[in-house]
Length: 138
Image 1 (cartoon, helix red, strand yellow):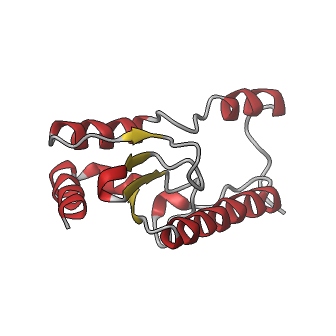
Image 2: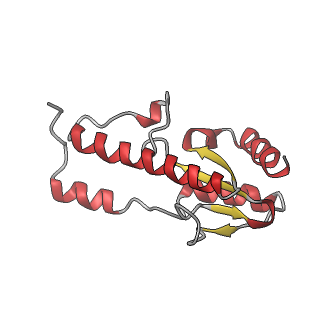
């Protein structure tokens, strides 16, 4: 059995309710880098599987920005399992990862090339910019 949460259930719900699904700080960093490099994109295109973060229609490319915790980034210290309600979190996070894989497969079948940018990669802004440009130009 896991540890007891250090805040009340009500407070935890308030905290988790503030977690955004789009326009996150991570996404904004990537958007600023890409835009600053001269690339233009569409946001959260509804008719594509998973409503991808940044869509470059003319290039048939997509950039997904994933939080390491929420999307279970393999071998990343930011993706550790919470100590309370472990069964709940294991199920929830596994479903997120499964949905990501399903969306990636569907996008690839539709002819899109997808780059996933992870939260932990944001720390090296210069390296990230080189990776983004290589992806968009490749």
